[in-house]
Image (tube, rainbow, N blue to C red):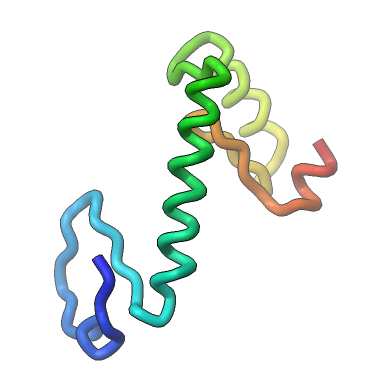
Length: 86
């Protein structure tokens, strides 16, 4: 859902699964959303399966690596510096 900044101040409730972005930020929001879809599709092509033994092992390893690195549903995220230190 893209809304103007004036309307944003009147939003009181958003259902789960909905995203709100100001019109000013809509291009960045849509680009990020598209990148996430492409990453998920590539992971599936590469054989990623949620809750598989490999997925669980990856989660345990990366979550114990530190606060600046996160692994969730096949996606490793964090700062460039934190990932480089792995």
